[in-house]
Image (cartoon, rainbow, N blue to C red; front, side):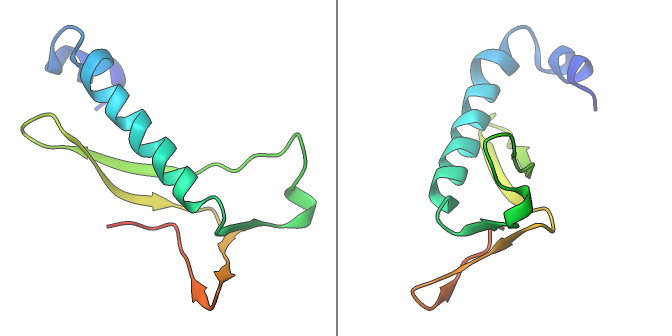
Length: 91
């Protein structure tokens, strides 16, 4: 379903006022929680570089947004910290 159709199905303002703020909170909190565990290839790092992650979110019957998983591109890999390997995938 595309954005315009999703807005129509939900009704006026539900997406902007209720769902998008929840989604933003989930994405920001997830990236902040994982920021120390990610490495980027040296040639891809720098002020002009960025990574793209795919966030799979779902909406339940009560219009609560839930994180299903985060897709990490191949060039950003998990890093070992204090003997534990962290991956950015949540189910």
